[in-house]
Amino acid sequence: MTQRNSSTNWFFRLIGASAFAGIIALIALVSQLTSSRGDEAASKTQEAYQAIQIAQQQTQIALAGEQNQLQSQQLTLVAQQISIEGQLLTPVASENSNFSLTTTAFFIQATQIEVTSQAIATRQRDIETTQTAIAVQPTPSIVIRADDVIDEIKGVDNGVPNAFAWWREYDSTSNRGEFTPTSSTGDTCYGLAWNTRQYGYHRLVVFQNTMSLTFEDGGAYTKVCIPDYVAISAEDIGKIQADWLGKRYGDIKNRPWEVIVNP
Image (cartoon, rainbow, N blue to C red; front, side, top):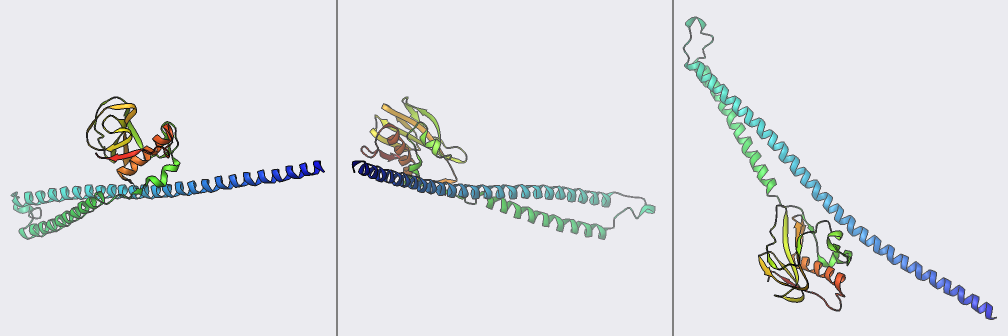
């Protein structure tokens, strides 16, 4: 009887363990699918942005080629006009009267040249207008919010750059000094500093102006640059870095970081 109960208990424990393992596997699968869908959406948005950029570049190249052709035609017209004027003003022998242009013929050709020249100038203005419109066209953006992406951040070295290709870090240091997070073409840059003597421990400062900072133990600075096709607020940048700091150096839930933007 005891052996039968023991066998029954073992059977139920086995069933329970299998069910528990099944639940864990299901949770992992759902998490993976959710993450995969998020990555797929971000990837499709990025591909759409790149396609638009390529189309814009190809249009600009085609317009530049047409503009070069129009300039070449314009130069040809100028040369023709000079040649006609030269023939009209150059005396010729009376027996070779076919060589000399009559005044009427000169004005006919000159008028044709002028009409063609005006048409070329009009087309050149149209091209320049189109080129300007493309240049100032708003760039498609990927909107990033900290609350939507922080689950992807791991508490390891370079945890944020490893998670997001659009997050680029430069000039990291723990030495005191004056810091200016200068932006570059195509990027908007921010300075991130934490555990500073000026703002205190467990406080993260996000700034774009020049700041003089001294660091306490565990304090540091890094410059973060975000490509212009990513729309993200300075506060969300701070939240992302603060989340990583909490995961890397301590429990963020028990001791949350305070984010200070452009003090």
